[in-house]
Image 1 (cartoon, rainbow, N blue to C red):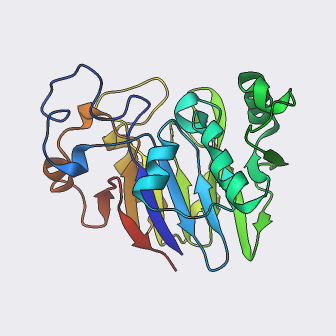
Image 2 (cartoon, rainbow, N blue to C red):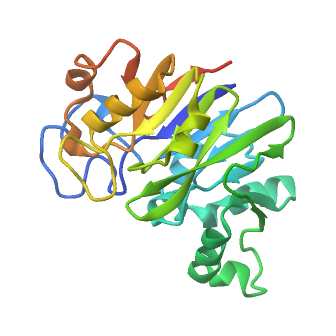
Length: 254
């Protein structure tokens, strides 16, 4: 499986509008972060995790020709605001786009995108909801995917495990029974907002503690704000198996 990090920033992205801090004005392309999303390229399917407001730009930049299914972690706009642009794949492949998520998220999307789900307006995206449940594996093509529940503040949201790869964004807390499902990982992707305590996200310190507990072979940090600091400076301080992900990074996972 090839994983492409399409976006690794927070809901504001980096640079933040109107900000002239050292990160937002950095010339290093690794300090430019779109909203979080990842593409999993498997032997038979391309699976997208989250469809945020930068979806169109991400697809064009990464030269993605096809998306076969979308996994949505939760309903916040930085994870779903690109839904309208899914229609490009509808039109090209004459298919409804399967979107896998919680029933709660489905209802939020029906409300937010009434013109898609509650009208007969021509040319709108064609979305087919697929309901998933915590800890109940589901199949996309040849691949089994395990939904893992954790909390973004008080909001339960969904992460995903595919073989020995796991993706947890907007992370704050996780219950022990869910943590037990993250053993024996080659790669863990986990969010780390910045250095100060936050009501719905873990800090870099918290993320490193969690990585030590889960003990994957490698870990990549995502959903970072401009308060995290410069990419190269922070990465030099990390354990040898922990990396700051950046937009466009591609990794291979067995």
